[in-house]
Amino acid sequence: MASRTIEMNDRIYDYMLAHSLRELPVQTGLREATATMEWARMQIAPEQGQFMALLVELIGARKTLEIGTFTGYSALAVALALPADGRVVACDISEEFTSVGRPFWAEAGVADKIDLRLGPALDTLDDLLKEGAAGTFDFAFIDADKGNYGHYYERALALLRTGGLLAVDNVLWSGAVADPTEDDDDTQAIRAVNQEIHADQRVSISLVPIGDGVTLARKR
Image 1 (tube, rainbow, N blue to C red):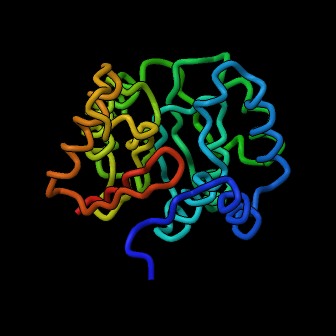
Image 2 (spheres, helix red, strand yellow):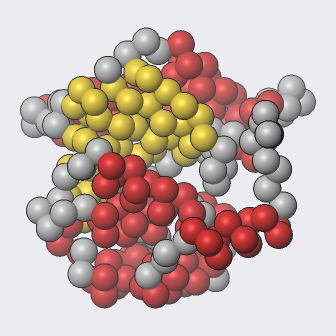
C-alpha cells in the first residue's frame, strides 16, 4: 500500500478525469473560452471545481464567498452546487475577465446566485464586516493576489460561521514554496500564509495536493 500521495503523470491524470469528472457542457464551454486568453493559467482545474462543489454540498452551504473570480469558473461550479436560495459573493477587480464568465453563468441559470462585486477585495470584505456579515458565511475560497493572502485569510475567517470551511488556493505554488532558491514576493507571501494557517489553532486543516495545492481550514 502506498504511504504517500501518488505522482500525477498525464496518463493517471487523464484516467482520473475520465472516471471522476462530471462537467456540464456550460462549464466546459467556459473553460475553453478561458483557455484562449493570455492569463489562462489562472483558471482552476476542472477537478478542483468539482471538488469544491462537493465540499459545498457536504456542508450544506447556502452563503459562500469567493476572493478572486477571474473568468468565473469556480463561481459557476459553486453556484451550481448551491440550493435555489444560495448565493456566491464574488470579489474581483477586473470587469474584462469577469465579463467572460457572465454569459455562461446566465446559460447555466445561476446568474442570480452570483453577487459580483468589482473593486479591491479588501474593501469589499471590510464592507461586509461593517454591514454585520461576520460569522454568516458557510464557505469561502481564496484565489487572488498572493501578497494579500494573509489579509484575505483573516477577513474570510471572520466572515465564516463556526464550522464553516475555507479553501485557500495555490498553496504549493508549482512547488516553489518547497524550493529554497525561490524567493520572490509571491512565493514568500504563500509560505507566510501556509505557516500562519499551520499554526492557527482556530481552525482544523488539511493541505490537499489537488490543482496547485489547496488548504482546507474548518473554523472551530
